[in-house]
Length: 73
Length: 316
Image (cartoon, rainbow over all chains, first blue to last red; front, side):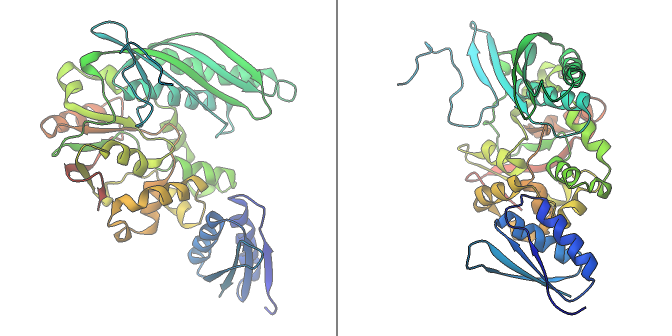
C-alpha cells in the first residue's frame, strides 16, 4: 500500500468513528491511516480499536480543534 | 426558599438517595420515584420490561415494596404504529404485576424519540429503610447483577452485537431487583446500605455509598462480574461516552486504578441500565444472603469487596 488514508470522523458520535476506522484499517491492511475526531471519547475509542487490531496509534491536537490520530502497521 | 414538609420528607436532594421518602405515620414510609428511558433494544416488549424493571428498582433499592405505578410515555404517534406502543406497555405491565404492584394509568405525549418509564409509589417500614449511606467497616459488598449493559448496548448500536451474546444481558436488564420481597426480618436488617447501579456505573454508585461514612471499599478486581463478551467489546473501542464522563468524575477517588487492566476499568465506569443492587451487608449474614440471592431472585449475585475504615475511597 502506498499513500495515506484519511478518515474524517469529525462531527460523528460514537460508535461511528470506531466503525469507520475499523473498515479503513481492514481495507488498508497495513501502512498509515490518519483519523480526525473531535472528542476525547472518540479519540480513546479509536486508539483502543487500533491497539486491538495490532496497529500502533499516536495522536496530536489538531489546529482546528479536535485530534489527529496516526495509526500505523 | 426551603420547602417545609413538616418533617415528613425523610430524604434530601443532596446525596444520591434512590427515591423520595415521605413519612405517612410513625411506622409507615411512602416511597415515590419515577424513571424513564429511551429505546435500548429493538424488541418493543423487551424494552417495556427493561424500562419498568429499571423504574421499579428504585423502590426496591430503598428496601421497600411497590404498590402502584403509572405509565410515562413519549411516542411518535404519527410515524410509528400504535401496536408498537401496545407491546411496550404490555411489557411494562408484566413487570409491574410481577413486582406485586398495580398499574393504574399514566400519561402520554407525542415525542419524536420514544420514551417509556413509570412513576411508582411504594412503602417501607421506617425501621426497614435501606439508604445509600450506612455501610460499616467489615461489611461485605455484594452486587446482584453482572456489569456491562452500556458496552452491550453500544455494540448493538454499532451493529457489532455479534461480538457477544446479548440474551443474558437483556434478560438481566429485564429482571426485577425485588430482593426485599424475599428476605425475612433478620436478613433485611443485615443489609446496612443499598443502592442500585445505573448511569454512574459501579464506581459512581459505590462512591456515593462510601461518602461521608468514614469508610473505604476494597474491591476485588477478579470478582468484578462481567457479562460474557463485554470485555471484548471494550477492547474494540465500543465504549459509551458516559463511561468516559464517569472515569473523569470518579477516578480521583479510586486508589490503585492503574493496577487494573484497561478493560476492567471500563467495566467499573460502564453506565448501567437496570443494573443490579449494590449491598453492604453484615459479614455474619452475608453467606446466607448470598445463598438466598443465588438460589432465586438474583442468581448472578457476587461478593465483590469489603468495607473498611477510611475516607470515602475505592481501593484495589
